[in-house]
Image (cartoon, rainbow over all chains, first blue to last red; front, side, top):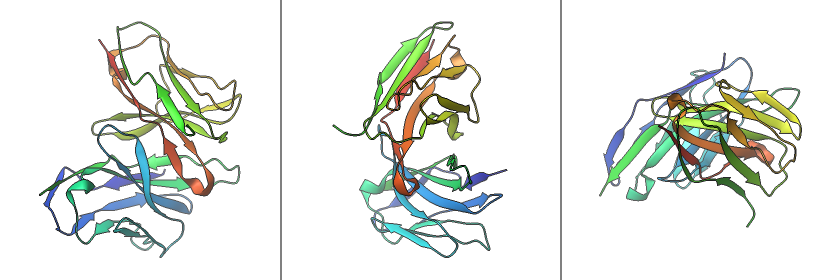
Length: 115
Length: 111
């Protein structure tokens, strides 16, 4: 089956620290990979995506590279800010001929950045 | 305003009662989804719909009913609420380029 595994949270860092949130997946097809972010009291928002192997998604200083050989899509940021405090979800979707595109989410990683 | 809206924002109900959570989108996107969010489980898909009058079960459909008589609305009904259905519920649509748009969520407490 298709699944996503994220590193256990919560993660607490100081401002300007380097961030890595690990994400690995299992998939029967050729998935697209996503990172979504959820700020307190809000719904999820797309942060970045990658649709094929070796693609790099980037947004707001965050990056993630689609690694087919290690089935990974780790999220990184070189210097985090307090405003990055949120819950981060890794997700995948499998393309199907019928066009059905259902996302499978990881369990989420809560990130807290201290000033 | 364009977008996806959910109502109510908060709901408290009792075991055994019927509850309906509303979801409305203004884009006319074909696909709509209902997720529940629980600690330790992330988001789990309850039901989804590919178009009006077309719905299908997701990962955790038991105890829930959906309908989609119009493209823009996708209500979720708990026919007889149980405590295990206490959760935060998110409705979503998928636009072009596979991007999911989420509503702000409904926090449901079943006492």
